[in-house]
Length: 80
Length: 133
Image (cartoon, rainbow over all chains, first blue to last red; front, side, top):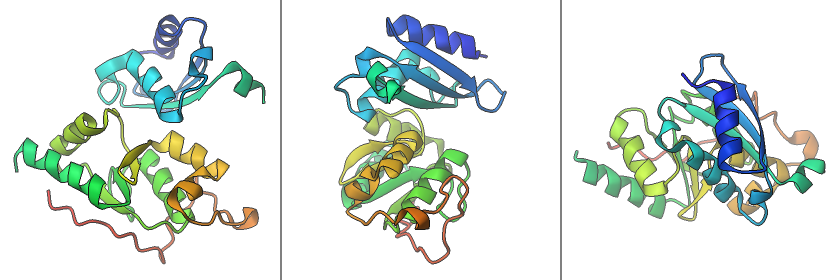
């Protein structure tokens, strides 16, 4: 069962320079919320940003990771 | 029904309905909090939309994911294009972009329902495409 730390580490490894805050929404290890800040999101649509984060986990999203709620911002957007 | 037929059905639903929501449960009885919030946002804008429950057959979700490349539900399509799931729909609702994409008026601030908690208003009658799967 993935932990919030696993998800945080994997996002931050896959997106160098990103910071991720991951919360387990239900405590059950399968519904997560990730707030990710990365320069990589600049110029991307919402869909593309979310796909970038989903892409870190491949088939696990929708599988063992039943739900992954995402907030994806650039460092500049996070400031505002 | 074969998987190919389900895929064709999903593709046709996206093509034929200007606003197409794939969700868990129905607009009247969502079976997942994310689907419920998405429905509440659409209902809050009095949007007309078609909805399909993906739960009756696991192959519906498989084929939907294959068609859209998006791994989770709900999934909202406007004019044949994937808009996103619950997070994106809620962000767009809050910024007014969802109303714009739907071509509807954003309600005045003080009339805005609390979509996180709101039940779908009974007066809204979504097109609700018949689940023929």
